[in-house]
Image 1: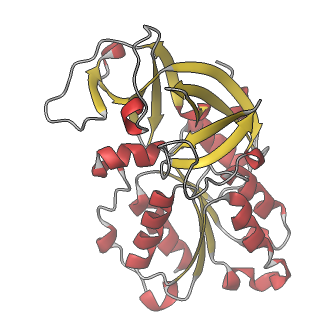
Image 2: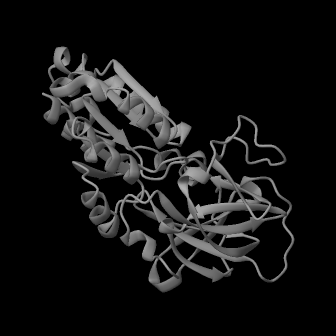
Length: 302
């Protein structure tokens, strides 16, 4: 599987694995994919949600299988060619059962549109982070973090210990933060976690382009830029503009480069950390560990 794109920095490109569930096309960032295999025999788990098909053990590791046919409410027809897409994000491995894989598409994040409030012709409305058209096909990019957290609430952000963070409330309450995350579910959780400890001035965006438009509007602030924007917290995967491109644009600007940029993503691994450093990210944190991010942020701003 060609993943050389991971070595490039700030190109605003991605490789999208296109697959089908029923008669609809969906996509996932190849960076989340560990392996693709023919569907395997699974062992059902008692009292599991209906979307959880069961578990299996490839290479001595227990992995849960989620049937995407049930998630997006598409009829299942056994063709004998079903596929398991094994993914790793949010520090866990999960297999997704799909009808078939079409291939890998190399595209720009700018080609991806924010999903409409109701995704036409699909029961995946509310589970999408973006939509892209390729060769006449509409491909829906699913919010896999939300899919998993809908099944298991513990798979969302881990807010354990946030209440124990000590901070001078008068200081952080006046600081303006910019949050960019395309998952409405996680964007809301991040914002609420920051508000919970005292931040009151938060601008949130669902894609990197809107966040960049907002941040770049402060280019004339000069040496006082951090009085206007104290920090940017960004996901990596986002339509229109990804977090690496957003970081590079900020850090390449002579005025905006003083703004700290923290990357908070389910894709943080050794390769992605190297890429984040190359575009100038001040720090990087792996979802779902938001306490580590907030600890760093409070110390930074205090």
